Amino acid sequence: MEINNDFSRTLSLLRREKKVSQREAAKELGISQALLSHYENGAREPGLAFVRKACDYYKVSADFLLGRSMDREGTTIGAEELYDASAEKGNVLRGSVVAMLNKKLLVNSLDMLFDLLGKLGSKEAITAASGYLGDAVYKMFRHLYRAPGTQSENFFSIPQNHFLAGCTDADMTYAEADYLDALEQQAKEKGKDSFPTITNDSLAQGYPGAYQSLLQIVHTTGERVNKTLAQRKK
Image 1 (cartoon, helix red, strand yellow):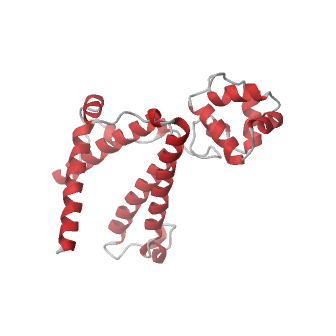
Image 2 (cartoon, rainbow, N blue to C red):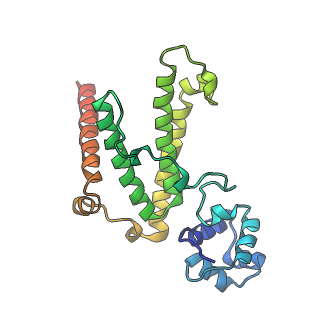
Image 3 (tube, one colour):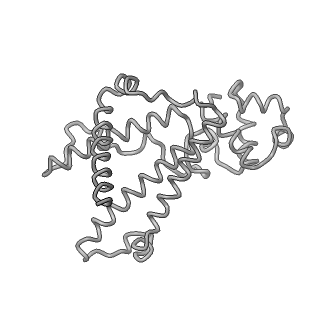
């Protein structure tokens, strides 16, 4: 049975989440502590029988345990099934060069960000980053949707007053906190060497196209924020 690289990490995280020792978990799973340690460290691959037991014990789906789904019930679609508009040949945003250029800056930068997070291997960091950015897209789309004042708010599950009161902003704040926690936990458990190398040279070499987009965002964001800070001091 082929097990992907996420299995051992998820297996270990689920045990710690359950707050049981390797010895306790191994006993419940019907194997030795040494064998469970091998599974959690990625030194050995388990058989189907163990995967089934682990899913029942930790109350998660096999897809979640094997890293095929970010949802514990395994109900989300796989990455290969998602539509990727940026992959379409000749894809452009009709009617606005500014929109097309800004879209490319963001798409290239996000592609680079998630590739780096993928190399880091922290599901928690990836989930938190996705949640934060998803909230930002949700906000921008909903503001655009409701701007004419003629659309029904029933299109969204978050009540209008809750949205206007900043519930989405609050969720972004929590997602950012989760992201910081995940990065801190990664450093503690895996060490600083587990992080991908992030230097000007390494990024320029590893992402020759996308890095220029990221640099542009870093530059323009820095100018915008510093200008706002300077105006507030006057």
